[in-house]
Image 1 (tube, each protein chain N blue to C red):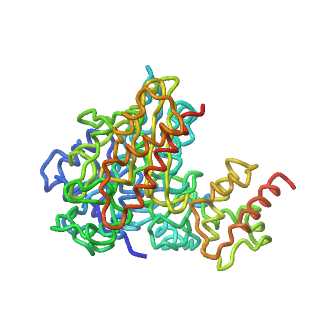
Image 2 (image 1 turned 135 degrees about the horizontal axis):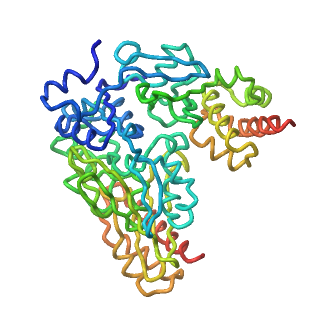
Image 3 (image 1 turned 120 degrees about the vertical axis):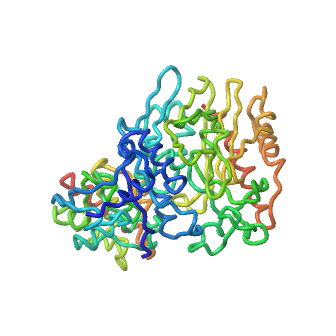
Length: 181
Length: 325
């Protein structure tokens, strides 16, 4: 197997035992299922988490509104329970981590999905998956958020249609339903 | 979407491994922490071919982890790889070092604060509209070119305190002014540097770090009990955006330290304003005088005189905010 980095290290002619080594196998959990990828075969060092989810696992929910600039939040996924930008996360950097996407949130029957529909919290829908992931992360750590806390938690996501007011209502409704309301 | 430029990815298990590998690749390897800045750069490729890293060395695999916040003997130590979200939410930092907690809380977006580290924030590349245009559209001084397109071009967001090595791009770190105001020290694997001397303007880097040097820890001395620290940021949107001007101040108990950022190629310490405040009680007049002194040495470019008013307003408000306790 051609391991990236190995050839170069020999070329330099330094003792390799005190140098950094390339990762060879990446194991990660996506929506509760285990996956293993070989670096250099299944994924390359420059494969982003978003590319991996889309191309290897067929999960199309992380979008790319800002073309990978990290400024729109539409590719947001949960990494070990925290919302991150999957377009600026390297797949090789996710070894041993657990990823949750909107597909997983919907599969688990989370009330956010219905709440977004009930409140018409989208127009074109392109930003929706990013918003739902960010909102889920908020409700996980704070089941009873104020409007201000909702706005802050969603401040990394952009909706060009301007559905913000409806999105806040949707998150509020989901929080109510989680409490059994 | 553009794919990220090809590179090799290596996991370092110790600081020694990381540093040895950086040395072995002679500038062709860059350290990798949160990755939000470096991967954007590797995707949009603003630099010329010869300046890109061929190897990224992952520091997050270093053991023992460089992700910690602790306070011992009146010194707050923050590991280089501590995420900004953890600094923003830390009760101890929020209570005694509020400028730093507020600065961390104002960086970019919640998602980026979950990924980005404190050392990455202070080592981010300074940039202007021309420097960051994709595909090396403008081969400027910071890329080894021979002229600065911003001097005669669109310099609305550039330096109001002159150039450094010809470059008028500004340092946009939110953490930097907080560290300078709080008189922090930055510990690398080679030396200990005062925050005020950490930044520089190089091709293309923005710090004094050697090619085989990494930040290991940030140390902040506990401010005097009656001093208050504040942070303030002006940007177009309150989230996601880089600052247009930001600043931090530590005032009270005989101390007055004021730092501004995004106004010069390096974080700017407003020493003139500090002198004005020495021995004065803080009131509206003193704050106004400090604000005028802070920008007394400004020399704006053709399109950015307006930033002087912004900087003045920020200094004045920061000084007044340190009054109420």
